[in-house]
Amino acid sequence: MPTSGPAATLQRATTVRWRILTSVSLVIVLTYLDRLNFSIAGQYIQSEFGFSTKTMGWLLSAFLLSYALMQIPGGWAADRWGGRKMIFFAVMWWSFFTAMTGLAPRLVFAKWFSIAWSFAIVRFLIGMGEAGGLPATSKIVSAWAGTSRRGVGSSFTILGMGAGGALTPVLIAWIMQRWGWRASFYAVGCAGLAGAFLWRWYVTDRPEQHPSVNAAEFAIIAAGAPAKNPARLNRRAPWGRILSSVSVWALVFGYLCQGFPIYFFHTWFFIYLVKIRGLSVGKSALFGTIPYLAIVCLAPLGGIFSDFAASRFGLRRGRRLAIGAGMLASAAALWLGSSARNTLVATLLLAAGAGFNLFGAVTFWAICIDLSPEYAASVSGLMNTAGNLGGWLCPIVTAYIAARYGWTRAIVCVSIVTLGAALSSLLIRADEPIEPPEPVLELLFM
Image: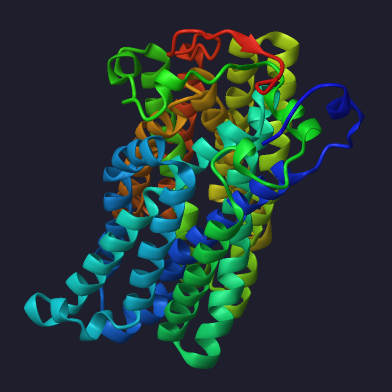
């Protein structure tokens, strides 16, 4: 257990917190390998089984429906039993069913219903497992990032989304071209199972539980943090306060508007490049990484900017500025990219739209911790429910608009929805926490 005193001030701080936050990023990479592989393999599956565009839209959204519905239970479980246990269980679950995707046409569901329903059920089960992962990362970030680095800490989650999104098209396309689309699901499932055991071996819920954290590092993490109230441990989340908070409902609406546009990239973008822009599978895989590379670059900047703006202009105005700047820039880039004739220019503009979307999204996650450090997983689970309901609607609505009016108008719709995320920030008061204030301690272990 870390100690304080004169010796602590002479120590050079260990860097375990950064390795823990990097582990969070790697978990999110695994989620995106499992989440995006179906959209990459979608054209092969669609061709092999003769699924229509509308059927593919429903298959792509099956994951998102269960993922959205299970966010709140997943966040509650993380607050109740800890982020470490929740993430381990979640990774094991979704990795198993990811591997089962390759067997979906031969599962009993295909005999009982149809092959399309078999795929939908398996994807639904994957979504159930992944739902607990993202809210649980808020619990880990809240404990490990420190009060002044919540934006930067939350950016590690978003960074994992970008890195996973950039890696998935290239890796999955490479596996599919050599061994077929089924092999890609088997490989990713096995990688997830291995990652789950590495997570359980190395990560702890709190810094004081980790044997490699010294007093100097613990002082950095704990500085300015409220004291841990033993009475709050394993206590139920204060849902009355959570559901009566205007800031929480603004987060919910804003993240719904954030989730809708970003899921265009998670579901339709690769198919859009192949079928509408006329690129080969290999070239589409390369172009498909560009939005996620933009996320890798812009998400950490979003976290840095959010923390800087909060310290410079105050928590309320700083967080609002970070969300507004990211979402307005994203909406503009998507609008311009929707009508660009040159494929590379269009891809770069759309990629900028994805990057600035996550630039702003980092702050949504930081605000969950601002509002409720002790129950950040429950708040973020509620918020992410809305984000993924927006994501669930995206492949269905964009498919309908694209089929009826064309892909340009479909992407314009995505741009307009993004503006809602910017407007929502005007109602968020990150400086008014849900939980009653606790005494502030510079160091927790004296």
